[in-house]
Structure formats: C-alpha cells, structure tokens
Length: 103
Image (tube, rainbow, N blue to C red; front, side, top):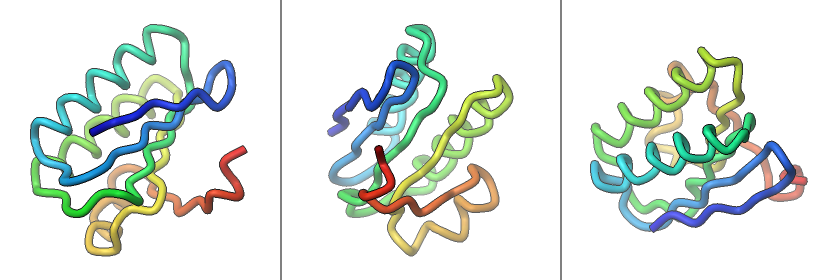
C-alpha cells in the first residue's frame, strides 16, 4: 500500500507499507511518474513500514532514482530496512532522514 503526502508545492513523500514486491514497485513508479508530470521535483520515499523488499523492488527503486536524478530532480529513500541499505546507497543516493527533518 502506498500513501502520498504533499510536503510543499514541489515536494512529496510516498509512504510504502507492507511487502515491497513487483506489483508495489510498479504502483510506486506510476505514482512518481504522475507526480513528476504535476510538477513535483523532490521525492521522498519512506520505507519505514516495509517488511521486505525483493530483488525486483530493489531494481525498481534504483531505476526510479536514476530517472529522477537524470532529470535534475531529487529522490531520497528514508528509513530503508537495514538489509537493503548497502545495495540502495550505491544506486539511489540513500539518505537516512529522521522524521524531525521532514519539514
């Protein structure tokens, strides 16, 4: 399940909950694409409620990050489960941002 929270006129946070598998990854990609078309430039992806991420999920997070970075936009993954942190840091500029820093 994914919930979108608008933080400012050009910043959104996507909260992902549950298992992050291929279907969830496709849904996240579509939401990011639609939000990009609406003019958002900074995307925060909160994974603190994710129970597991499969290989397709890892790959999709990397693709989303690379696509946004190539357009000059910002993609930050927040509170990723520790088991995926090392893999994501190499591909999507993973940053652990505490909830106090969200605003």
